[in-house]
Image 1 (cartoon, rainbow, N blue to C red):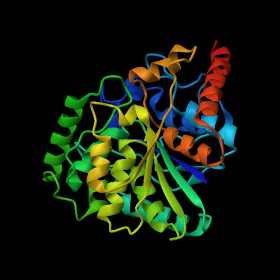
Image 2: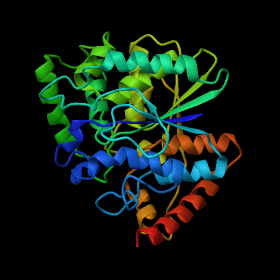
Image 3: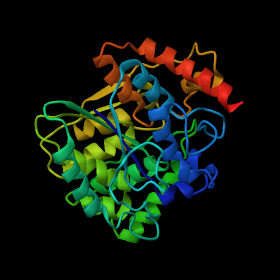
Image 4: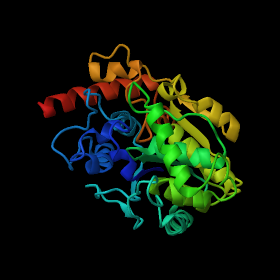
Length: 331
């Protein structure tokens, strides 16, 4: 089963921090639109396909390609998204995340955690493989804040070709000052780290992971955002060590520390060997230049498809086909 947790944080509204936040009118629709894409192949929340300001498509196009090729079963979980998605979804009753520079980021983190844990213990298929993915603009910055609070000093990735490292450091400085902490001060209190600095997706995925029956195999599908969740699981004393699956674009990002952070936490990783260099569509070919990189479980969906016998080349070909289709619809 593939679960997509859609969420939101007010940090995404900081100018320059998130490509999705460049248009505040569209921002609340970002994660619901991603959910629409992976279920229907095209968004219903908006009248065009989600793109960043430079015209690069959401990584949901890769996940949708894998779903179409492999017939992957999907469940959407709303965990603090500003707006609901069009497809059927599970509602966790979470509020969107707040700006950690000025107030606690997820005041209801413990309640979200407990509801997600209960959901997992009752709904997860026993003895099966569960993959947890996310869509939350601004999520790499909340990941940085939580990782720092837990004692990890590496840098997170970014959905843009240029990682706003300086701005993220400014957010950490302001948020940690408000809470009155320094690097590692919350390593033994992960739920407080999420409450003060994180986002609702982290609380929900953490709760779901901790609530899973012990015979269920767990994969976290995402880049440094899911590295932060893995760190939370470790800090909470979870006996399960999840696999973190991402794309080569995150793993090869020189501005971030995906592999180094994974090594510090002690998690194994899967790196999806996507290659759009031969794509006839500039929006996809530019993934090779560091645009977008990951999200909506793109790397994990490639792994999931591979386990059903679907090759990476088939996923790439299907993504190109979907892009061609949506280009015609957008026009």
